[in-house]
Length: 399
Image (tube, rainbow, N blue to C red):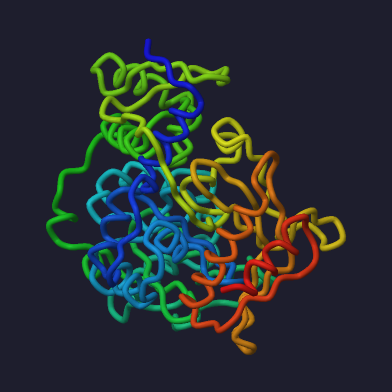
């Protein structure tokens, strides 16, 4: 069995996640974005738009400033990516489409289908008519259907049209695209997925689980079974035998990690670099930090998103970004883009334990200013909450 110190495991994870190299020094374009997709294999989507929608941030974190329109073209205009449930709602390389078909097939028989059985009894032929309409008129938003139905309540009170489209999306009978404003529109796969991908053989569930698990291991570098299965939200009991097969075949190498209680595995190609010196603000949904249990084991960093916590009960803020500097997560900072005032507002900034606060504040100030300019904002203002805020304000005043 191999053994890794926690520092080696951390550096291996950072390098596997794309933080082992310096950011490009020239103009960042679609080719750079594609390389990030190829490395990460899944980009989580989220509707929160406090500073910038989450799926834009992993590219900024690894590459620095880039034109947002380049990602929109890559994601929704060139058919290089498709949307499906990878790690939650996600953008995925289009080559992965066959690996998710077993989930699409299973969703036709899950508990959600009971609603559609009832809908079909009440409105015979409605589901088929929606699919026909998308085939005829798509891409379509739910509200553009001839008979969309009425919402049953605010937020997630979906109409019968929206629920039907979501069911067709889950089951792979339609695929999704995005319009300005992040509105999801639906189309048939034949118009959105390259024909050679649609014609590719469909792997068995076992084969797909194995391929996704190997991708997870390559992207994580080293991880427990929970880490490996969480990346593509795979069921742990059903996936354990696949882990055993990958170990037997030498793809996964059993590896003990200092301080980790659970058995862990590294991808056979993963090696810890001698040093990693990354500086990056991370969205709460970045691949590096989205699994909170792993954050604590890997970085000694306990993070909980507080968006749905009442304001008086929030500890660190509404939309808090972890700050990676060197090989550690050294701070967390609440951010908000005030586009009208052309200002990146930072209500609070907190340092983690045992960090050089002067060094962290200086690095964080530079990264905040870089982020502001990337978003077309002119300045950064910092509030008074948090033990790092005063130092960050001072550091900003020198930039």
